[in-house]
Image (tube, rainbow, N blue to C red):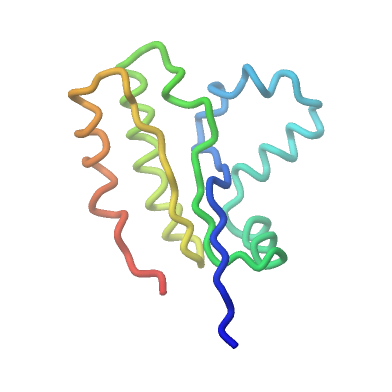
Length: 131
């Protein structure tokens, strides 16, 4: 019998340096719970992969936790931070032994720059075979 592969969608992670965007939510979380949450959002290997194995999940499509650059009032900073995440993710995902595709943030404040920010650093490094 063929095993059906499981794919988990929108499992969250946090790009380093994006913690301030979540402050509106995290300030209300018990410090011990917040510490565990922070550890889980930053983990791409041991903890995340072990949980995937326990649940029988083959692929997890990660999503940058929010709010992120969509909540940034400075449009130029939003574009810079989105690029930061797009540069971080391909390098980080290559270091993980499993395919972990990700949904990253798009700076929507400057429409003319939105497409350029998406195609610049990420496009060439996103496609790779992990079979």
